[in-house]
Length: 322
Image (cartoon, rainbow, N blue to C red):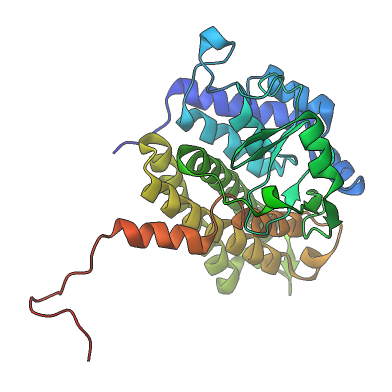
């Protein structure tokens, strides 16, 4: 299967990269860190005006009329930029929650399973397994939530109490789409940390030589690329097929690439990679957080195992052990 991007898809991706480069550059990223993350409403409206949230709505409903493959490209760019906020939930809520498609409303999600809710205090609606919370229901939900420390300084978290918080994660297509878009963000982060590592290896000197000339550093960079590209193929393929098993595989590969690439990038940066001023640790912390969202590794593995069907003996006879 050929996953080469069309000219229109390349233009879409390039346009989003340009938009984020202008509206959320490194200064914007660091400013977001200083204020403790959360949603920048001005930027949210810019994303809405660019069609980020309404991308898959039909044109007759005010949307762009594109599909999941194009959405994956935009979320990949958001992952590269470490764009904060409940992007996935707001995108999924377009056409359901008033103002979500235009970026006028911020929608987050309660995924159950004891997971904290991201960006709850600034949300206009919350997706739950049974529907959408707004108005008085939302106010009561927020009142029953308590802040918890987040490993990602760009993502404030609250632990919600009550029946809604204990609800199972979303069934069917909605959950699958959320997992795939999150995988696309992880893919973008994995690609970005690979670039950061290579760039640093080309400019940093140790013992009178560029560290990129050291075999151990070369191997780390090669491993990062070797994780990123299979994840890219899996994410793009799942976006075309929409198959739950392929989405589970894509999430597993993208989570692994994002987390391990960020670790290797930090290793290549050496001592400075551990400092607050470096951006490497932000990619690692966000990758850890995303890995638990929408579809965890254990859940993805169960889906993959179920997709294999019944275990059959290799050479005939009984499959029993012992």
